[in-house]
Length: 506
Image (cartoon, rainbow, N blue to C red; front, side):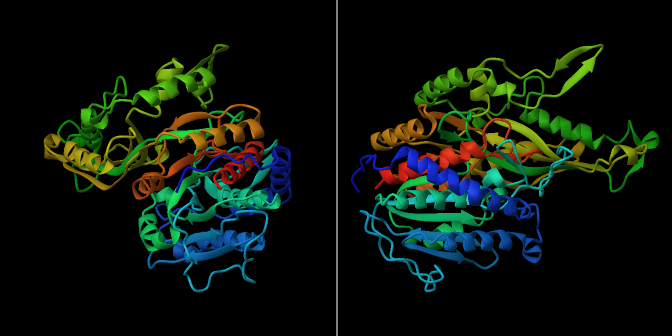
């Protein structure tokens, strides 16, 4: 397929007006319903099948998509045994204002065999599963309590990533409303992303003949540096998670009787972590977990740091303490914007995200505990292979345990990061026009510290495809944490920007 040229055939004001009306009249309501359903990812809800919440949000989204009556649309909820369901939709390409074949009465593909074009397919990605509740929500908010306030829709999952399927279909409808051309479009809306997308590779394999030759991927599961312009993700870190467990006794014993003789499981675990991390600086010690930042990414990081400045770290909810009338706060690891940006995108990091074997304070007696376990999350630079990192970490943490304690690094899983390919001239022009049309400002790029397993998977499967990785997770939106919100004004403009890019890709 030859590189498409931006057509510029969408009226900017009309597109934004169409999209904004749909958000105000329908999408906010649909996402409020979605937020109210505790559709936690299988990692956090092993009984997800019995609970039925994932099925509920997938079916609800499918029903809504069909009801929009987008011309040329076919939709199917694909189900593979033992896996979360996946919503797959296909929209025929439109080459002019003449609409192609309308969808069937129910909009559902019953035979499961869509004719994939040989080239020119845009793939749109999102997910419907959610992170768990977490603590610390404002008293008037909650993870499953949608609240729309000051342009922000609060609640778990609206921004990460329930909005994606609704925004995607709204963008396509906005293009069709003006009779503009757009390419063939397919959508993959999965339900296991927050568990590391373990089900997605099987679906990619099963659907490969129906995807066609993907020339552009639009991923709506990323973030934004501010709410003032279109942000495109140019890199993603990888991730390794696992449970580091240390056991020294078969049962707890009186601390006065055993301490000093029995090594503390916590001290042994702390010693093991010293193999991985310099506790004074936070730098991870194994050289294999580091990589050099490519020159183009470094240049883009400098530009992004100049745009965002100290907002890169001041936006975070730092802990404050009032002492004798003076306010102090925790200091960031660096006050240099460029170094802060690189630290969250191109450096490996260690986070302890869960603890087992330590009782709550009110139940903590004078007992030497038999075991301690930490759930570890090791973020990897975009160019570090996650599978190799898993094996290296397992060896590093398990071998030659202090005092010959029983040490295991179990449930270890990894997902590699991603470094964006060079942006084709047509896409650069389309993104620039979309950002100027919708935001009145040029688009910018930013690396993200999180992981989207699908992107690396698709990059390998479609090495020539261009990538538009974007999302609504801007400052303070706090995905995965308390008071998560969707910034609706930004979501409106992002949806309109996607419409412009779809028209330019035709």
